[in-house]
Length: 240
Image (tube, rainbow, N blue to C red; front, top):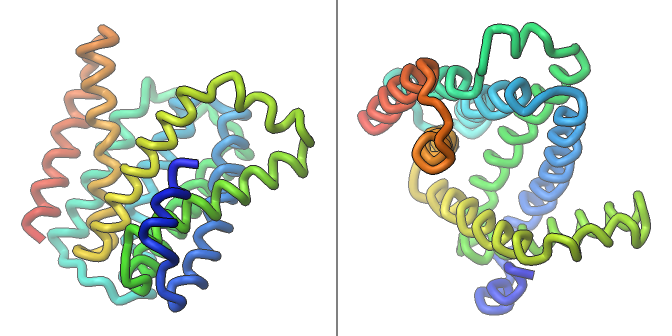
């Protein structure tokens, strides 16, 4: 609903990007299934650091090996530091990871793989599209259709009924999600994909700051250490 007017405005992306677009929709669907599966089996504090922390490392590896993306040792070290910072930021205690069952761990790692897959795919697709904004609009329209059809197939009208209960927040979240990922897709046409993917994950730093300042959550030592690691990683990425 958010992206359709933009798709009409920008038009379809160039045909060479369509295979990438189709692959991205499939990967995004797998991402939703793996992520929700992981959350059903383990706490967010266990799933999040594995899924989001390892994704930039996998993305960098895939982009360098299969797409010959430029990445210096400094940039690679920065990505590694940033990923480590995300792990530290998200862990509440040493027991978080130790207590996770194997199936939840599999889903969390599969989530990281799909994040890496759709990030690299969208970077390549946006570059082939001729217009990253048209590509973004087409992606979210196609993804929205696919997800709606899947929900209807799984649970019929009952699968769609919950939408009515949070239509306002859903539209707000859709607008912010489309804007945020649209910026990332555009950035991947201007800079190496591994670096953009890594910087994108620094959202956890802002989330932690919001939690401390506005939600009055305690400023734990792990958050301070994580912030230092993330900022150090960003500096090294900037020096790439």
